[in-house]
Image 1 (cartoon, helix red, strand yellow):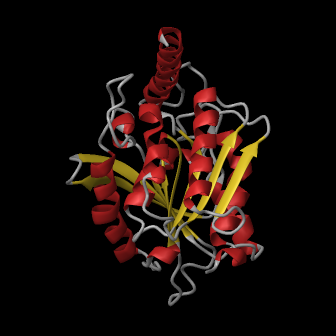
Image 2: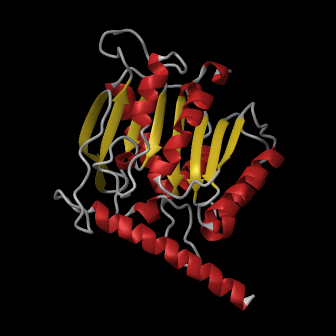
Length: 303
């Protein structure tokens, strides 16, 4: 038992070190990253709006919010659109702002192509920037016993539901009901998406969870699913890479099995993928973007 505990704490420490490096890199504001490499040029596609310094009274901090609007948004003045809220907004559209040296998730390019090809319904994507110094605390539902960090996800969730969503609904032509509102994220962002998605199942009818840090606090999120009185009426897209750290891969598999046992059905209200050879990074996750968008917003996703 002592050997197992030592290995597990070592793995936690290694992962948190990687997160700390990402946080340090994200703080750089010049044209090079922490290692001195030139930053990529911006890679934005489509109609992108940036809202600088969105202030949260609840969290007493500010963050940028980036919004992708579908083709024809300005011309179709009466049309309203479903919304996908994504954590770590700096990583989803633009390699120049991503805190991973490996790149971005290409959600803008994929959405643009799928919408133009009529493979999915037109949608709005809202990228909520994470704050480097606060990311671990805001994205975790409880304090982890191995690292003594985390535990502010409930407050972060209130910011999303009580402050940000009303602002987006006021500024843009959104479909505001739960069936047209989705929440997504990866890594720690995937963990907080699963947690807040269940907590606010009346707000978010669709969840996309990629490479989640489901290991947090000895797989507390798995126990959350197991403790549900019944399956929630939500569509969930869950994925992980087979070459990700074992903590991610194994805990995601446990989360998948918990969802199945609770009543979700693959191909109906649950999509699950283990991407062969994929590692832990946004460029690797970008290959699963088509799957999540078509499952949640394609013609077959309509209830």
